[in-house]
Image (cartoon, rainbow, N blue to C red):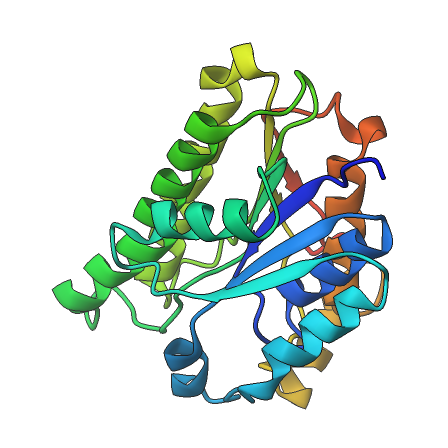
Amino acid sequence: MTQRPIVLITGASRTIGIGSSIAKELAKSGWDVALTYWQPYDTSMPWGSNPKEVQSLCNKLEQFGVRSTAIEVDLSLTDSASRIFDIVEHDLGNVTVMVIAHCHSVDSDILSTSVESFDLHFAVNARATWLLIKEFGERFRGETGSGRIVAITSDHTAGNLPYGASKGAMDRIVLASAQEFRSLGITANVINPGATDTGWMSEALKTDMQSITLLDRVGMPQDCANLVRFLCSKEGGWINRQLIYSNGGLQ
């Protein structure tokens, strides 16, 4: 059997999340899938998390005839990236594509943000992204032109300072890798999907977002997954070093 390509997706723990939708879309396209998640963060959020969702997701992926593995890991720790890649290589093999879909997001503004919160956001959203990309570049064994890095970002900063600022730093790191990994033939792109309904929106907010979106609906995780699938395909290989707004025409 021809070796299937392997994708590592960070932040895929909730069934209705963007990471989970990406995982299912790539599994349907024949990718073996490695996932990371961090249950303590999910359970601290207002929407909560069911610990059984990760195994349920893996079971769903394997119904498409691919292999999967799930790794619970705290990305604020500096040794997490190397540990993730060690486990994925042991369980599945060398990673061809990395999708950075994790985040740490706790609302606070310029005046109310604590130093501890600011540092934690940057540790998870920016520093962990750098360490993961570093590990990916050092271990990449794929053919030139086959490697992909795709990250999911946001430009929501006002009232959400540490999240937005750390995502901005993440963008720069990802786009820099497109140039620095030129010799490896790895493309690197960032997707800004706009406000996406993953269970955190109130009905009032959905109505507001729909009214300012040209396609007259809110974004769904599948919308982002469709674009990630294309970027990871051979046909998407010419798109490189871009920050892509895929938000239905959000005004």
